[in-house]
Length: 247
Length: 276
Image (tube, rainbow over all chains, first blue to last red; front, side):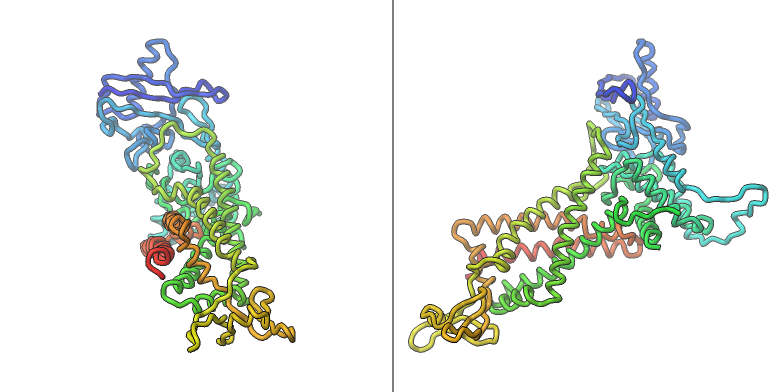
């Protein structure tokens, strides 16, 4: 496959970037998108150019490290996958592919396609946990009976890998799908209910403080989420927050 | 203890948007029922209804809630839009938004602004005339009295008052709707403001009637798209998302978004093209 890549290049966080065009040849349809970028970078390094910086880690679709806004969609045109699991067979020979970083005020660009997603970490630190005494006499979690339906929904919410595709996709750069998944995964379980009210208030406060936008229910995040996190979680967060606010 | 921000936080803005939006949906349904009398009722019925809507204390209270809701919905919407724009200072070079969301859902601010423009012009054309216009006509009726046709004022007690008596200065009109005995300076009867006549004249005007009708129909298209996203979205914002009922809420929302603006739009079309 022969492709034309239009990639956002930005030297560092302070300088303004721009789209640079790179032609690339001999791309196999069986390559993953990141492997295609590896090939591009190999060529750039051999020429003595600065390789394109992009985030990646496990390359198995579970770590949430890879990002990229490809041809106008987070993690590209495929559904239910991260960029490392996106294959070049999704594209046609001769295609032009735009590759941009995830864009949001709360996700500042560090270099090229790498963005700083530590705002998600700070939201997690604000309440995305349960306070358990681990000093040696921890009670086995399985001793508390949990309704199967709730356990399943909690698990579904917990599959969020925190990649930030929801923010990148949302026209408002809203982080509500992420935050609501983290709120829900605990709110549905008895261990999480204890701190549920404080958790939702603190996490939403932190989300607002980070400069994410507001949800307008377009539903784009749910469609682009590599883990299929449901909008039901946002509704649950809305309920949790409302109840916690008037308590 | 965590602090709640029921007025300021991102979620609070959603609640207010949803609550005012749903209240305005109720208002739309009520307003439509009233307007349909322009097709299915007579002039007296419509003017009686208009009088009731402008004088009944409970309705007055509701109308204030409506004004506040419109203002709040608009201001909240502007705040949300400004914040959301700021949340992404550098835009994407290429976006494929149609792959993951509906057009109406992405353009609520534009649709809302157009609706606000419509509401303002609509209120200038009808509401302001009904409330403040000193030249608002009173409803009259032509009756054959044997000795030729005579024009009579309809009064709120179901009686008639010959127009000639006003012309002969035996009766004076005060406070726009009150008939006074000129000699004794005593109030004798009340008349009806003829909103029906104003409305028909507006859409049947030789010069601007067609433009007004077309503009009204376009405004209803805009309203339909706004509701198409807004109705179901309000439920999601308030936390009502349950797979058991989502289908029902979405279907009802779609039906509401299509039927209500359609019925509203039929009224000026009927008045301009078909009514006498």
